[in-house]
Length: 256
Ligand SMILES: Nc1ncnc2c1ncn2[C@@H]1O[C@H](COP(=O)(O)OP(=O)(O)OP(=O)(O)O)[C@@H](O)[C@H]1O
Ligand SMILES: Cc1ncsc1CCO
Image 1: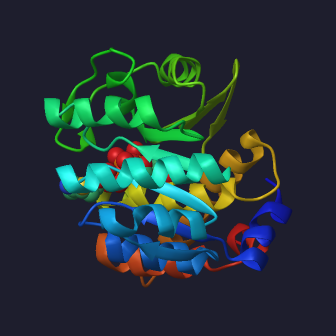
Image 2: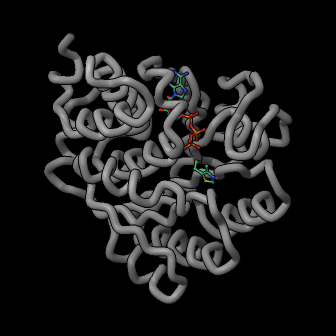
């Protein structure tokens, strides 16, 4: 992984416009701040264009979507496309209801995503493949490599399927990230925060593959580091220690 890329985030402190869900607002803001980005959570339609125009990247996460939020997301995404800054779409729970599915279709018809990231069930759904889901969680098995490649091709984007192993596809190529810890699956919003950190990494000068690989690998190493601490007794203490670890250097994360 490129240390340079993470250092670039920390020097630049990119302003990331998070149009995210109500569950994770605080966790995502604190996690992104610890990593080195500069979060702004702004959902109002009235200011979505202006905030995106001030930003270095836009995250669109449909976890607790409403109609006014959808309009704000489209405005922010269009402003980002016009400015030439990255847009990440996280189609949280897209397979759960037709409201979410239609909203996702509307977003991608008006906004060109730089990256689409989600769990197996979510990314399978947007290419028309059925994988078992339970609300916002993926509980079924899928061929993540094929899913990532088809999402990348269909939406002309970087695609990241998260899970025990993260699968990244861009063009015809695929790379995998095996860092991580199963406690991440016990903290709601761990995927959502990864979306914010990914957006920050996409605002650097690296290649799309390096940016996505750096974001997922660093994130997983931070989880492994936190989980090793004797002060971690379960998901609650893990979440706090994980945020601490996101602020560390790569060398600290790799120390045993
Ligand atoms: N069993 C696991 N082992 C290691 N890492 C995991 C595991 N499950 C998830 N992760 C990691 O947790 C992060 C979130 O992935 P996940 O697929 O759970 O996202 P998600 O379902 O979108 O989460 P959420 O909706 O709670 O935000 C990723 O960095 C992923 O690599
Ligand atoms: C639990 C939950 N419900 C809607 S969004 C969210 C956060 C994890 O995606």
